[in-house]
Length: 331
Ligand SMILES: Nc1ncnc2c1ncn2[C@@H]1O[C@H](COP(=O)(O)OP(=O)(O)OP(=O)(O)O)[C@@H](O)[C@H]1O
Image (cartoon, rainbow, N blue to C red):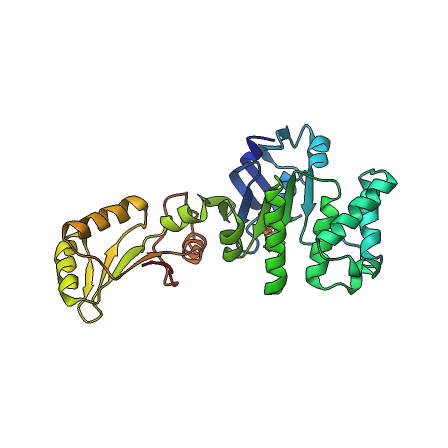
């Protein structure tokens, strides 16, 4: 599949008086990981339900795998996998039986169903536990079984609704590895999450859902640049070099710390701005001992976008919060 795996335009959904989605546009390139990020109740699950044909939208159009979810729901369903917050795993039967049930639902011939079930259980580290009732599995194992069951039909687009909520850090990392492997195999992953780190780690593109609208959308780096407060910090050990750099850069708004021999220059951290800064240092004939780029992290973006009382559109972001910034040091 080429082009867009998911394309939603003007999605609206209300439950009674409550408007949950109020004109949402989403575009997910095939073969990528897309994270829909939002606080509790933002409408993430509702969006997944609409995109995966489980619930109809009040307005707007959705194409998944190139097909319209309203007029070709059956065909859409055949090409997708959905793992919800409430697992499809039946606790009373074993992991193996859960897998075979899935294979039956997918109408796989018996021998093929057993082979696929065995391969997936192996891939997700569940072979040993396969004979035990799923109710005895840990949260992470149940989640892995859930995804394994989703993969029985070899879907090319997978929706994972909060795949790591409630998991411990180790299980969360295992889940991230699974997502990366799926994408390496050409699968498109649409996931929802409340975890900024998860979106940062996994997603090629992130959309922040707030008050029924997309407050911002882009790569993690693009989103971080929406929040002001980025700067470059230069540290010197030679006081002479420090003074020369300070003289060359204070016109550019550099804040100087004479005791620590550091200069802090406002910057969005882009290559263009860094090059211009280095050019100015070169012209002054000085070299910094350490150069650190401080970019706001996703926490800054998320809090800035989701704590406002009115929704914002991409590119217009409320004032920066006090959350720590991430740092990258270049020596
Ligand atoms: N079937 C329904 N009937 C009425 N209201 C609903 C229904 N489904 C969801 N809602 C409401 O829509 C809003 C969004 O819910 P949704 O589950 O989509 O949010 P979410 O972002 O997935 O939240 P969470 O992270 O808590 O799962 C909530 O206020 C919820 O109460």
